Length: 103
Image (tube, rainbow, N blue to C red; front, side):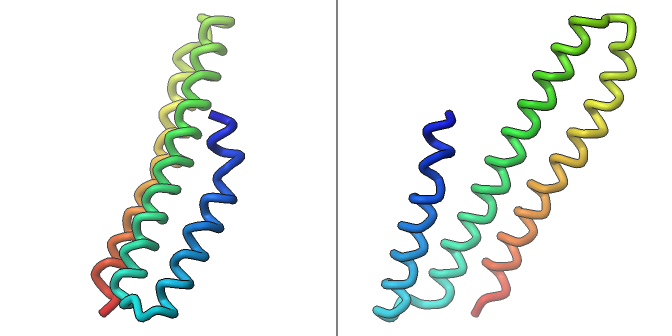
């Protein structure tokens, strides 16, 4: 997993350089917006899923260590997941705006 994340800047640089070369060759703005929308929702979903996984793992670990406070931990976990999920929703909104507003 860490190898994939460590290669992410190189992948992003390759995609951006490909997009720049393609734009110079006459690629339409609509195609570029579709590429940007895919990157937006992909990275937003990746970050949100990693964040939710880490939050859940730590909440379960804390509940296993102190079972008497599990209801408080569960409430905090659900609140944290709501805020983490809002990042994915914002990514979806940006992707939809890119797709439907670029002419």
